[in-house]
Length: 69
Image (cartoon, rainbow, N blue to C red):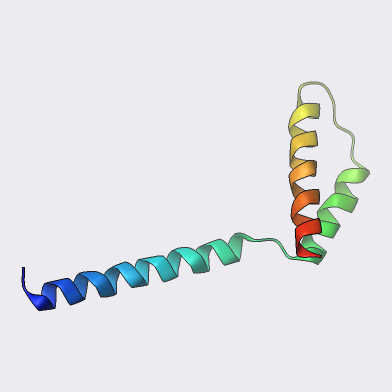
């Protein structure tokens, strides 16, 4: 393996890491977005088997919101 191959591999690996971080940042919700979701979820009606799923999602949103504050 030549030095150019090693440098090319390192460069490609760095670009992949940067792309993953950018993608993760795009998927993070902002404080106002989380606040909106929590307020909207507060007024909706959940029935039957969806209650537990809804509860777990609401807790995750609330935790993420308090971490950002």
